[in-house]
Amino acid sequence: MGSLESETSVIGWAARDPEGILSPYSYTLRRTGPEDVVIKVLYCGICHTDIHQVKNHLGMSNYPMVPGHEVVGEVTEVGSDVKKFKVGETVGVGVIVGCCRTCGPCKSNIEQYCNKKIWSYNDVYVDGKPTQGGFASSMVADQKFVVKIPEKLAPEQAAPLLCAGVTVYSPLRHFGLNKSGLRGAIVGLGGVGHMGVKIAKAMGHHVTVVSSSDKKREEAMDHLGADAYLVSSDVVKMQEAADSLDYILDTVPVHHPLEPYLSLLKVDGKLVLMGVISEPMQFVSPMIMLGRKTITGTFIGSIDETQEMLEFCEEKGLTSMIEIVKMDYVNKAMERLEKNDVRYRFVVDIAGSDLDRKPDV
Image (cartoon, rainbow, N blue to C red; front, top):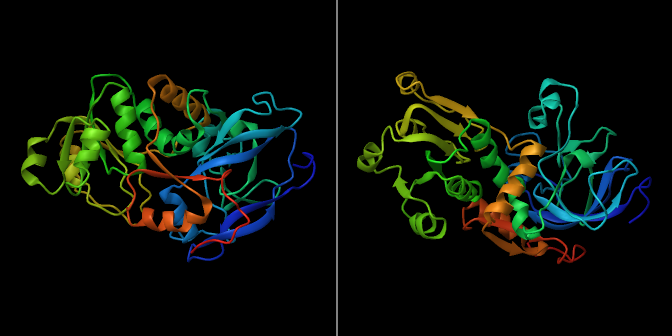
């Protein structure tokens, strides 16, 4: 690496247009300052949001774009004012890398709700340089947005926790749903959903998985330890489970009706939306009014919550269930993820990949 005051050339894998095909791309990291940490990327998870971004599903994509926001790496250099990290430590970077630091959310240490937050990629940093993500050999981040990976967590296992893990941990903590003895449900057993089952079980909850078909029953019950499994189209079983849940974490990232799930909630129950859905969602108001129920949503978690979640996972022995791939398989992996042809979470072995090699697309 070069000096902290100079720009450094790196290789990442970028999408050039809404087809979303990634291929090698050379660019320079932004100039770094006294609060910055230079990170050699070891692993980076693949999130469903990466697909939305590279294919411009949300209409806000800028190209070329290097995705990846579940980044685990090794600190190679630190700025003169960096106190939190040392060279050689294993660290993580999640969804955001900047905020205004002066608004209400920032002052309350919930910077993920800052209106001027800076995304890890597909955004512009304060110096005007585009942000690029973790599908690259190195990245630079302000120490405020970097977390320590606990020693007992394997780096490849920790990567998905930086998005999927904290996405489910944050609402359980914020809404007081992290006490034992509660009954909850996870709707959708994808990358976020499977961490929802694991974390809720570790908190001492009775956990039901709700899915659109029976095909994930074995995974939910035998592999993840869920207590019950419901198929949302099974009217009889859904009716039997009515008014039984304290909360539902809805992780489904496509449009779907809410009424079947709202009926499962007790009085004062909460339905927490987590999937990124671009279409308006509908429900009939009596489903809410007659049970004083709440439909709400949360977005990832704060940096403090992310660190707390990592330490919770270390204490409880929780890890992601992953499939490790090399960078030249990333396009196929994203295609499989879009088709739901993956059991849990892909993690790209960045350090073990030859980023100069041409992609196999």
